Amino acid sequence: MLRAGTRVRVSRQALERGAPRHPAQRPAGFRELSRAVDGISDSVLSDRLSDLAAAGLITRTVDEGPPLAVSYALTDRGKALLPALAQITLWAQEHLVENPT
Image (cartoon, rainbow, N blue to C red):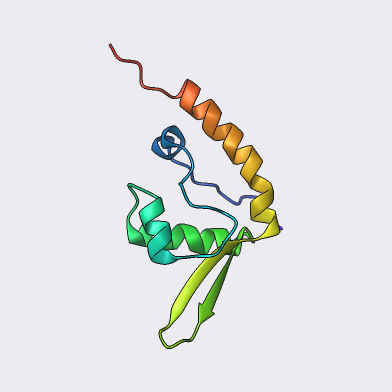
């Protein structure tokens, strides 16, 4: 359950670009997610993934290997957010467009 005061960090730039082009129906490794989300450093992505896992929106699974592999997947709670995020993205693309002068 999300606790009161849980912050959701979404940049204007991310909203304008839209959702990452990563299919949410399957687990993905860190590198795959990094390639799917432009304009974010690996350290920031790592922090956001930790935040999402702590909020119960994604799972982090470690396969000891060899080789060691880590994958991330949406939980049912995370999947339930997809329709709302799609609508927010549409709104942002319409209303947060920079006005040329």
